[in-house]
Length: 419
Image (tube, rainbow, N blue to C red; front, top):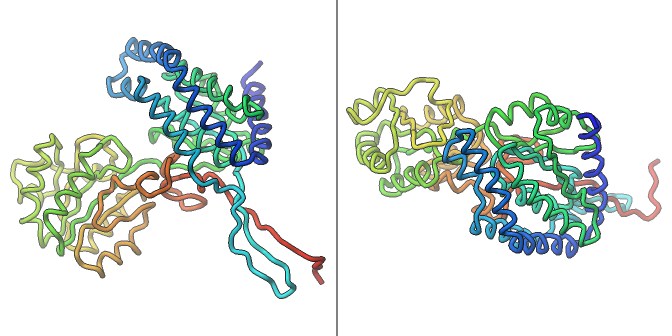
């Protein structure tokens, strides 16, 4: 079977699964998820054995310890995957929800119903836990999913998918509900991205290079975020202790995530008082500082000079840009020029400027007096999430169950005609 035939066969399998899922009852979906969770726990030894093949291959290739850690499955991580599926099973099913019902002058009732998207393709990199997370969310939202993980996790992903597909089959639904692309060649993804009409949505999850490749080659709608260049602006009307805690948490709590702060903006009016203790605190956590000329003047010897191109970089590490700005308007202008529309925060006691920040900053999440690390589906009360979208159409911000559905108009009539 050539690549074109292989990919189309997989898509048709998923399409059949999507038709069955659209008609599935909530209890049936929940049974699948709980069966998946139970099976993952029962098959821990099998999963760990298959995962060891991937981690051994990764070490032979000389991959970094950080990447190997992301790739590794152990009992704790398998339990977390299972717990995530149980959590999704307990969430409210969005499918079938009716809203905005209005009565027209001819007595016709018009409203909207929430329905599944159909076939969702997830293209992702090393983390094998994404396999279970994505499948669980898509199933609860009534979709079929086509999973295409990275080559580094091929054995782990195949093992997880075999368990998930068995759970689907036990509930009387076609295995195509969870379809896996086990051919890791680049050309397979390129063919898959041509299948408009069979695949309804593509969600790439990984580095900027992967997301750009998918977006530039897809004929199918793509939900994406390229990178998270996130900012915290410390306003002149501020609480210093709170500002230090928010800035530290935004950068240090987990620097390798897309919602970690990459640039700290400080109002010139308070920079002399705020920056020396703040930068000392960052240094205690081994944060490397790249500073503007004013930052370097205020904190001599505490920072390397920042370059203009640095402000566009998502470091995903303990590295931070610091810039002193001439007030609120310059902070807003900086975010507009260098930001990636992901997450921005302001620390301020000034209500007027806080509300201006909410209105004028164009990002998927804007926070007042809170850490950027809080832009997360779980923290926002969505439960599990499939990623954070920086797009503006269909979904923006953390993507939970509701974002994996769409709406259609529904009409209740009693013989009405158009004249």
